[in-house]
Length: 187
Image (tube, rainbow, N blue to C red; front, side):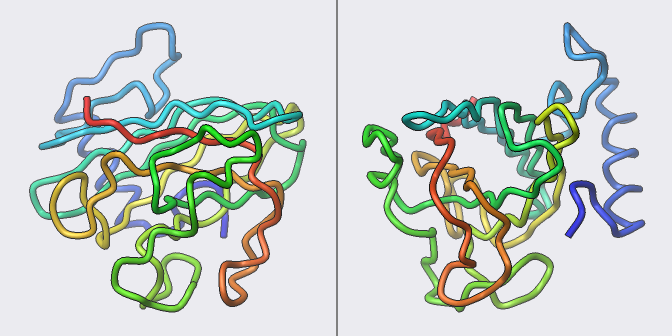
């Protein structure tokens, strides 16, 4: 999976929402993470590094009236040129030095693990972000199996960035250690 939407429909919707929102940047250089889209509800998870790691950034969630959730992440401190798995985890607790306090993948419907856009999959399966040569990543994906406060709510849960790529394997994608953690809060 690439770090940007591959579906022409997703790209078209993101472009249209950007124009409709009249988005402008403040310090962000026009990045999608600075845009409000036309969200009914939005939430964010500021990502902080776990012990001995450098991953940090922010993951935004923009919930639309039609139930689509746009997830936009801007991260840094990743391994240059490497893919890193990103998941919503069941608990909004980043207190453990290794991020283990966030629990397992968020999976309220007891589906098998899978990479988007494959279905069924854990509600928390968000795919992989690709770091550039300086260890930074920008990632956008549209999903329809989570909400902020409705079906499969993600508010007060954690986003975990993993050390390795999610290979789609069972039960959780073999993604390695947790290098970044942030709790999702409505804004």
